[in-house]
Image: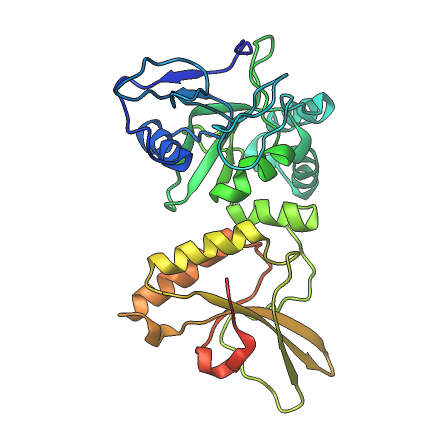
Length: 315
């Protein structure tokens, strides 16, 4: 039985069912802008079968992110999804309702703090389409505050991030409208919520330099590998895919820590320089794209692989 409020999409033409579930998920995202792991039900059928909302040995596949009161089938995409629907904090949701009534011109630091504190556990509904390309070219999952008195399928950022946001490289746009959204989160903001329990980190061990740095004589440089608490596995995979798409055959990373009498500063280092690319513009394009996938306080450096020897390791 399909839960009330779940959107159902049925393919109008047969598809090649010999492919993987990932291919079908890609078709859903490409054709209608919906992620197959984010709540809607997608029904595909092959040339020799009729469409049906189930996962069967005949490979008529139903792709759903959450199947309440049931066990995820072998046709469910990605990691196992929760057996129950998302449940948000209604008090947090009510806080957000009150905050968005404040005009943008009056939204101060206190407003920002309250908004971000309530955001991860609040209840949202999804927009249509679920995933859109922002003006920056990156994919954003659309979330809207629920309409009072209207039934809706609940989405909760805290639960969404592990279910599909981290794996798919999505950011989030809150209440998108022509006059502008109430908030926009990059994918890196989601990663920071995952590793640091907050969207933004003001004070950290990462370097705050905004230009090229030169190692001082009294500095000691240590080289290591970023841990899971800095680069989670899904983030490593996304970064590797990004760099491979820009011609880096074997993307690698390292963590350098520069110790001096004034303290320690660390940076993420990747195995490329401007000379790695056909043009400086492509190098700068990559260096502008990488920060969107990482927490905002991270310091990023491109360096020739020979400079660190065995310090680099594949992403």
